[in-house]
Length: 227
Image (tube, rainbow, N blue to C red; front, top):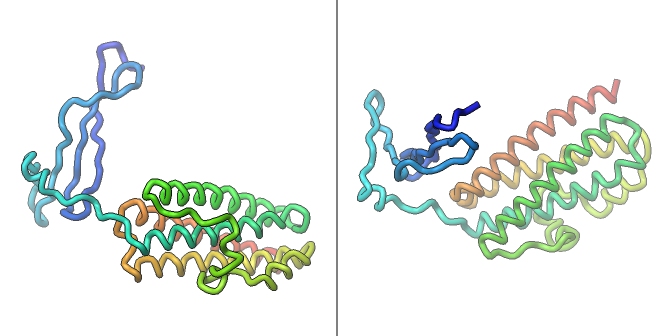
């Protein structure tokens, strides 16, 4: 517990990518848990290997370039990934009355939760930048042919018809390919010059990491179900 007079100074570090500098905003944590600033933000530029960094003056800080703005590649990535995620939700919606394996059901629930959260993040990203949010079923039209990993209408119908163990195998096969398509979309983002904006870069990296983990989990589950 903090006494009424005790305060802890906390350094909050933010990376300034363009110059390789770090900004330290110093705040105090008060007894009631609130924070208050103690000084202006301090920006430290790392030195060369073996040398100490130095604190930039206010004049030098004013010359720092702003963070990179988002690009058309970022916008397209977010719009297309929303449509991609929506189809994944269409797939997980089939699991409840078709899957035989409780592990498949649990996996589908995790995918549903994470992708709903990510859709909300992408919609917020687009809204904050004045970009258009795609409709809930945009992927049923022109995006099918352009986004890697998307199921065709015939494949979705095949999944809808399947039941039991057959459904489990088909769901895992299709969802692995769907996730692999998302990883390809991340690669395409950077190849097109996107991902320079910190927020879009962070989100793309999270998608890449999370879906890579889920692909490994699904492959392990495939192996167990095949025994």
